[in-house]
Image (cartoon, rainbow, N blue to C red; front, side, top):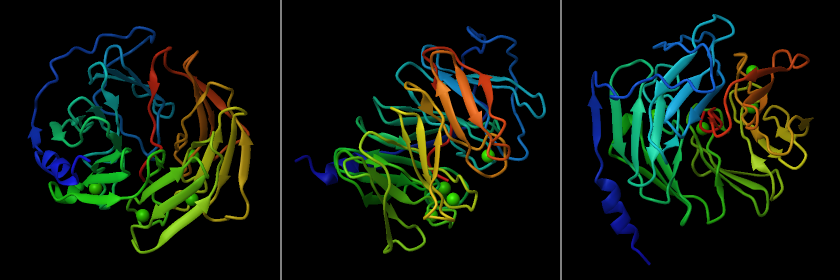
Length: 322
Ligand SMILES: [Ca+2]
Ligand SMILES: [Ca+2]
Ligand SMILES: [Ca+2]
Ligand SMILES: [Ca+2]
């Protein structure tokens, strides 16, 4: 067995650099498949809400849809190279997701903050690790974090204490990381979903000795945790691809599941708060036509479609973390 300690040493070779004012040295001109693109440096979204956004692996470019409320945007940014994994999150704490990619080949993170305050670069991870989004220390900034599927360990580099990692063994091979704020204390909880049994195991950040265990889902489901009822706590939820059915267990009413059919075989569930009412919306992305099919939680009788993306694009949304 390769020793745990040797991995620790690898992880300790860690660099943090903020390179103020550097450009990525690439242009922003590729608008293939999308029309009317203008480059806009910043979108101020009040109230906080999500816009449809895609990452195009072929050219490492991000495309964020125009804001229907203000008309601002769209926003286009080249940030990434082939084989990078997009991992947007709010790394600088300004309330907006930043352009960010994780490079699996060498475990490096490349963040271009939306506030344009310089580039963040961190080495955190080894090949095989999965990048994770979450604010585990609760300071409002996402922490550089990875989950190691081979042994179920979590390696969290907290933004409040960079270089002083939090390491947890939580999971076994086959488990799916489902970080979220299940206990409502505004710190992300370490959590996994076990497909074989459909059981969720949550390590509560407010009381690490208290383990939340909930059976919810079947082996072929996809976990889609979110705060669908808007009480500040992440709800257990799964999406069943074969039937396009959502099974949501609201934290305010664990005995009253919400079951909604929304999606066709092949669709990807991309739940997030698109209408800005503080509740996660039921949304699927259809790769064949770049369609975002949105049920806004504030007006569920009026679902709508946003066409944003072309085949091959990866839809971006926040399903993890807070
Ligand atoms: Ca943090
Ligand atoms: Ca928490
Ligand atoms: Ca909730
Ligand atoms: Ca909503």
